[in-house]
Image 1 (tube, rainbow, N blue to C red):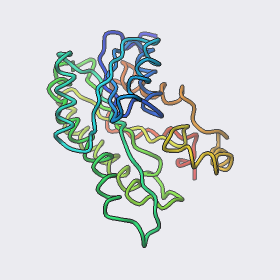
Image 2 (image 1 turned 90 degrees about the vertical axis):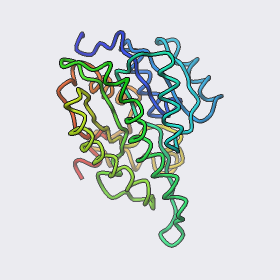
Image 3 (image 1 turned 120 degrees about the vertical axis):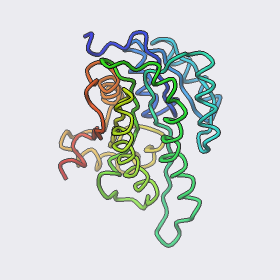
Length: 255
């Protein structure tokens, strides 16, 4: 079990107050890490912090990561309490759906700012703390949350979302090459359907059909996401970098 032990490590999970971020934060806490959550809404942050406190030491930092200044401010806030950061999970994201003829410019700005630019600016802002935590045998870790919609063409009119996630997957590879010599791994996970606020309406309408498309015949569960983030951030994943790991029950990878 030592392969998956995160005792003494410090992690930041953006968008960690609900959905996939909450699942990942719980997994990191259960493996022994201290976790900082960030989100825009203070009430949701406090609710998530209280819920996760049963699993370990967790703090909430309010942050809207749609600008570079806000990304730097989050890194500074964590740096007030920590001298090093072992794990950065870039999970905060947004989506937008509209027909081609009606898709607005604002849908590109909002989604790319949060889904693609923020992970870049956050990783850069946290580099000093990540480098401080990194060793040859146990690198610091960056985990970007992409999507299977960045692996295949999605059925819905989510142009900016799909493009942003495909871009994030490739940014993951680019940063993995650059940061590997600095003893930092950079990987991405590409979730399929999981129960979350972003997916709630879709699952309500098409959940049974979506589950039937997966070779494993179900949608994702919290343990599925907790497991993959613990693998990528523990000693078990110390030699993995530049990977995009689908966590989708086979929906995108067997189509």
